[in-house]
Image (cartoon, rainbow, N blue to C red; front, side):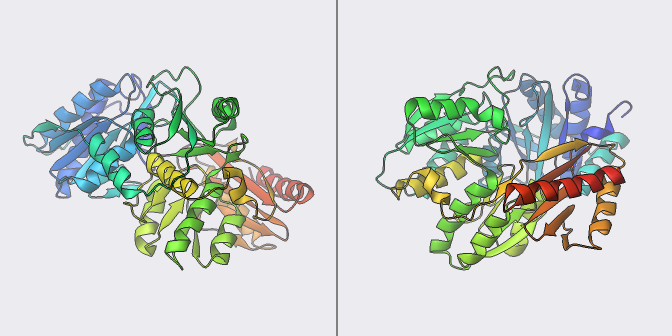
Length: 451
């Protein structure tokens, strides 16, 4: 198809600006290409979900048209969080899945997350879809569409899956006007919690704050509400509820790797020796704590599709990323689900008496930076990381499974190329402030030299 922006076919999904990258003509072409790819791989039935963005209902209709035109039948599960669409793929008789969502991107974006069988498409597979879209050589056929309420089944499944204790908790749930609250809030109430709602109503303009719980400024409303209401914690969702943020009873933030410490410790009580995966951005304290508690810690590449594939390979009980993606295989299906992760955290808390802030009190003290982003030319980012790795391997141990995680006596520094943006992502951790500054200065100076 002439005029299609090839940059929208990204590492983990297809994503672009509505009306510019994603016109009705383009979306219909993409839907038909995706359906063709599915058919070429033996898939004929597709679960289809959508978020609450203004363009999503129109895109739903275009996907039904495109998928039907190549012979795919559609199970339309309606307006749901991404993990609810995943749940449909794992529990209903379908061969593939499409989630129409802009996730945590700005309001003028939308996109498509794809599953073939129970595996998320990524990398070369999405590039193959692109080639079909550009070539226009589509399958032909007819298909049907059926609307189905999967949300009730999802909520009931979780309610039967978790075993809440007797402790009563007040929980702030900040949905950021994304799609997570319409399922998360009634589910947590069903489980017996006193819920204080923030921004549950889906609103594609995100009028209160951006729905990305990895950014501290986006958590300020939740922090303030926890303090105002004397809540026990806050659970925060990103735009499509596949990523979680947590605030403790004092207003402190539990980042993704810190939450993983709490979750992994609970699993190890029932699954001694279990395997856990965390991405290269996570604190060394997480990996050390898993090993100290008798588990197997695996450091792996960032990216939800890559993490899921590694989980299947290693039979890990749990995996997580700094970004708040948490993947439960233990008692669940292995996909990233902020709503279910929140329920598992609440299960832990209701079966204990400690406040959230005390769960990490025994971890050794370190200081760290958040994720830092440096804009670089798309065509240079991987080359810079390659040169950086080679340079530091002359003097330091370097873990190079995803970028360069450079080890120093009192800490580490990471630089990796983003798979989705023209940026270098870096993070640093050390035993004290002076060491942190020294490590950060050393690594950043080398990056600047190589750029």
